[in-house]
Amino acid sequence: MFGRTPRIISALDVGSETTRAAIAQIFDVEEDLEPGDDEVSTAPLKIIGVGEVRTRGVERGEFVDISKVADSIRTAAEQASVMASTGVKDVVVSLNGRHTRSVDSEGTISLTGSSSSKDTCAMRAIVESDLRHALEDAKSVTVHSDERTLHTILQDFAVDGRKFIKNPVGKTGQRLAAHVKVILASQSALNDLERALGEAHLSARLVMLESLASARACLTPDQMEDGVLLIDIGKGTTDAIIYFGGSPRYVSCVAMAGGFVTRDVAHCLGCDMRSAEEVKLSTGRAAKMPSPTEGRLESLVSEVEETTADPKVVRAMSSRNAEILLTLRNDIRRADAEQFIKRGVVLTGRASQDPGLCGLASYIFGMQAQTGKCADTESFDGALDDPGFASVMGLLSFGYERAAGVSSFSGRDRSFLSRAWNALTCKNIALT
Image 1: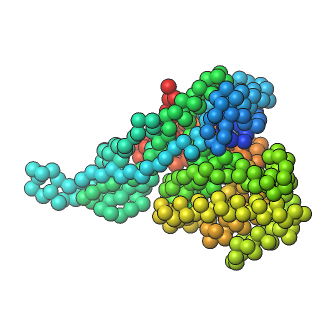
Image 2 (image 1 turned 30 degrees about the horizontal axis):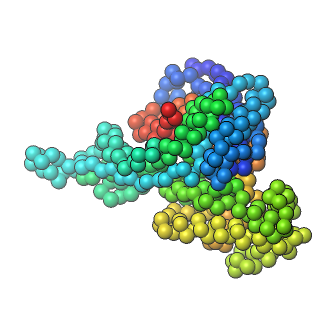
Image 3 (image 1 turned 90 degrees about the vertical axis):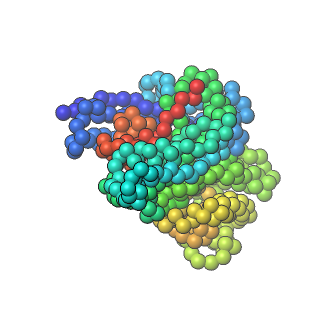
């Protein structure tokens, strides 16, 4: 009934420290697959090419020299192309959270009779057209002149105040509300990205918020459903996202990350940044991570110090990492989003391998913390385990879902509701 056709998809993540590219071969299912068919392709995304170079022209997530950024992009893409023996024209690309803001929006419609009706308080069953109207109302948010809507993500519905309903069709009530999270991106940041890609002779197939991509790679559906905090620690920024009920409830970016830790190590040792980075990485590999335990933050730092050759380096690293995590925790509390974290904390990004970081996160957030890796590694042929590649892997996954017409939220269900989950979760935008 259907055939398999190998296709190519490429992803690009431009970080403050490293630019990474990956090319994967995918097998798409023909579009004429009938609804209800169980013979859905489960073919893996097979990585056939990767590229990784030190980023030039980016500081703390900001493009400060577009020509140098373009050179980094070009080199990473060429490395991946040579390995894959295929060219790269368009890419699924990430956007750093520093250039975005999120808005929670609610759209409501009345389910009661019209003013001319004899019974204006009568309840009726909800139909699909009601969902459309509520969603259209929810998408109406104030957008500043230098912003574009990057993602509009459906969270859930509410019927007469009953929250967290995923499919209200068939329920009866007087008022239907749709809740969405709208991610708005800086137009100037998108312009910079477009120019850098253009100078590298590439174009954007899909632009994704970086933390969404990392979450897609590292979190399981159960974690997203039950409630989990993902922290992606890069060099220039720390991105965080909280999932609950299968959708993002909180998105933020802290302008403090691994680069600050490296600078503290350099100051501690009186060496240059490159040497400090090498010391930091070697310390991370040698240190024994403490088990999450009850106790004072000071005792956790001391426990790591005892396992390393240079305790003062670990103390410098742990102090800065604690500051990053405390800043994030306080922001989460201000947003009243801590209530959604039920399944603990997942750490990813290259800096997530710092010694004692899981212990610090466990203490600060008061729950289990672990280092994340691709939750669906087998689907990527087990090619990459480095947490720094999490964003790229997630970008490939989102790109595959868009190309194949499937969604991690809805599978191949052709109903309006499932199409809404898919379209709203992975909204594509043109940079022009």
